[in-house]
Length: 306
Image 1: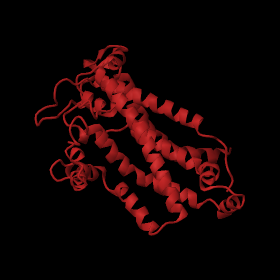
Image 2: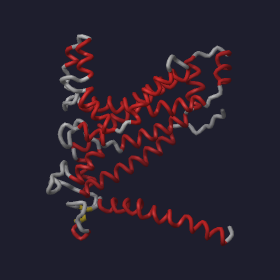
Image 3: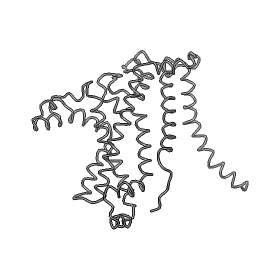
Image 4: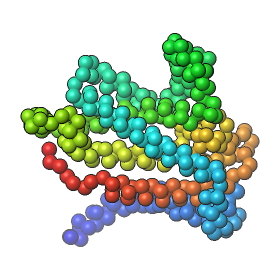
């Protein structure tokens, strides 16, 4: 490489590398360091930190609430993921094959994706799940299903599944559009040849369509995994009380450890443990790295020509 070209590369790359080190790498290293200390407040001076070694990690996994939050995260990942991927693939396949007013149905399914999550959560909690005049109550009463109409969907007993249903409803549209775009790239000649050979719709989907959109499925599965690990906003808003075991997730539990369960006008609520919160962040980071490695192992590396 010529010296002038090397200098040009350094001149262009240096600002990016410096910005990366300042904005990303330093906070990560600082968080890892903080996880080995007991820190009373996030703004506490460094000389007030008390070194505790691995105690934060040991104490974290011994806490029942953290284990519950991890269980909730896995339920969101598994149950929610299965529902979102199966429903979005089904609708993508049906709309791709062609149906009456297909564009309208596609836009209606995608609409919740473009609305801010806070607005969607408000719609679900205040209107769909409302125990006095909510959509579900009205529909079930009309159908004569008084038992279902009387269910308090936002209570502690049902809050988790109510949250999961609403979250999945708002997640289907994005996956749908990605899968439809991928299916449109598949040449029609492949489908015609399969039909001429006597293949059924099911065989065509599993033998042709699904393998050819595997990269898109992998991408959406990756986004879903990362979103579940960092699941926070829906958990926070659907919580009946602070740190509600029904809807709490590791990200929400981390927030409680760092900032407290509530913030008054004068001071942060007591009981914070910033070192514990940092330890949760490190654990979630390691889980994310392991999940990405597992995804690369699960999904096939074969490339299909279209």
